[in-house]
Image 1: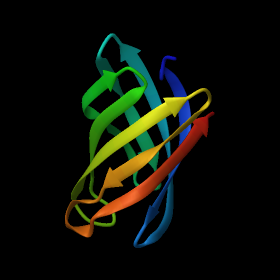
Image 2 (image 1 turned 90 degrees about the vertical axis):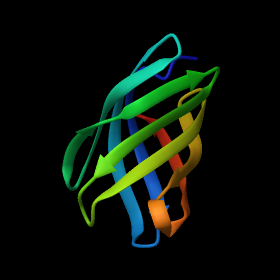
Image 3 (image 1 turned 120 degrees about the vertical axis):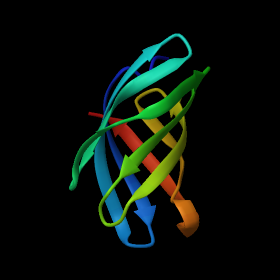
Image 4 (image 1 turned 180 degrees about the vertical axis):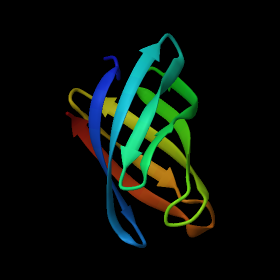
Length: 98
């Protein structure tokens, strides 16, 4: 199943639940798009698709500059996985199609 489309995601971080919106485009093994949240919108980088598994990175500046590294599995209208929060470890990630 293609990940192309809009997604609402939640990350359970040490600073509480953080919500964001993803707009993804899957083309073969390449994943592109944007992530939008409280601090604005940022493009995703290094996006890859392997079957129903997705991998991408996003640079944020709020609450501090950090590169987030995502790993998720798409199943129907939902996704789940984790996000590496730099030196703060990993946080659970869930989402659903918008």
